[in-house]
Amino acid sequence: MTDITRILTAADAGGASAADELLPLVYAELRRLARHRLTKEHPGQTLDATGLVHEAFLRLMPAGRAAGQEQHWQGRAHFFAAAAEAMRRILVESARRKRSLKHGGNLHRHSTNDLHLAVEVPPDDVLAVDESLERLAAIDAQAAQVVKLHFFAGMTLDEVAAALEISSRTAHRNWAFARACLARMLGKTEE
Image 1 (tube, helix red, strand yellow):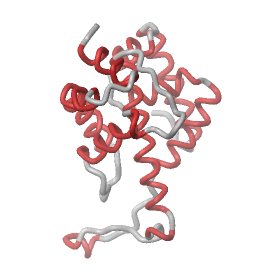
Image 2 (image 1 turned 90 degrees about the vertical axis):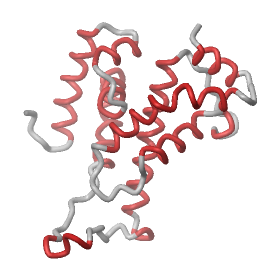
Image 3 (image 1 turned 180 degrees about the vertical axis):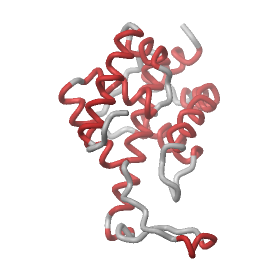
């Protein structure tokens, strides 16, 4: 049993110091996942990798979960898959919040350096991808999970295969299927 798995088990059992022990062990990997995910966001994103990691970590720890929402970690891969999902949800919530009129949804951020080049920025694609991903999950849950881990968490397809306990070939097949479905759902031609 690895240190991470041992600490996750202690956190599930309500160990008060487990979160303090866990964060230093997983922080670098969570930052890598967050940086990877944020590189795919449109410019003007107000969340940085540190903020995204901290918010996701808080949601994953027992104190950050809603009452009655139990979580039993099945190991390191399960924890990182849940972290990737938490980061995705945080970014989707942020995109929804920014789109709402109350938060300036019809306004676009422009750099003062580029005022003479300012053009209308298309709406954030995060919401469209999230909606398409939910539709894909209804069609093929495993393919949707492959997308979440590969695209959102930045795992290689071989790492995804190991995390989902499927063959590498199945992960590659699911990725190809998911790309084609999502491209069709988003109205883009598959390249």
